[in-house]
Length: 170
Image (cartoon, rainbow, N blue to C red; front, side, top):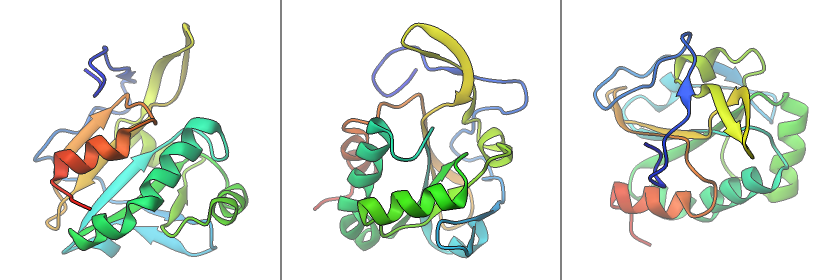
């Protein structure tokens, strides 16, 4: 089930859904600022890795700005944030600049990380079936294991619900 209580989209056979306790798949991806971000960068710290379909679209902008607005409380509670989409780094750079985002946006145009995290698969958008990014959030603990995974999330109010789940206060 998605966090809204509706049936969650299914992942393709190439990517299974991660569950609490799973070892999070390692990754290194290019970012909006021309550097790279790696899961290993967060070893010893918790990180929220969220997967979104496309920069500069209404839902993805809502989600990104909600994460950005929650950075201080999240970081204060020991959580960093990384956004991952299939967008190319130049588009991510434009998005980060336009929205003044203060966390890394990573580019995965080949869908390798999206698939490894179960965030790529069949989904229904406005009643039409397609294959693409399943809006998802995976929280990885300091030991590299999944502590929370949500698939098929809605952009609106997702960050508020995640903060409640993680016990992150203002």
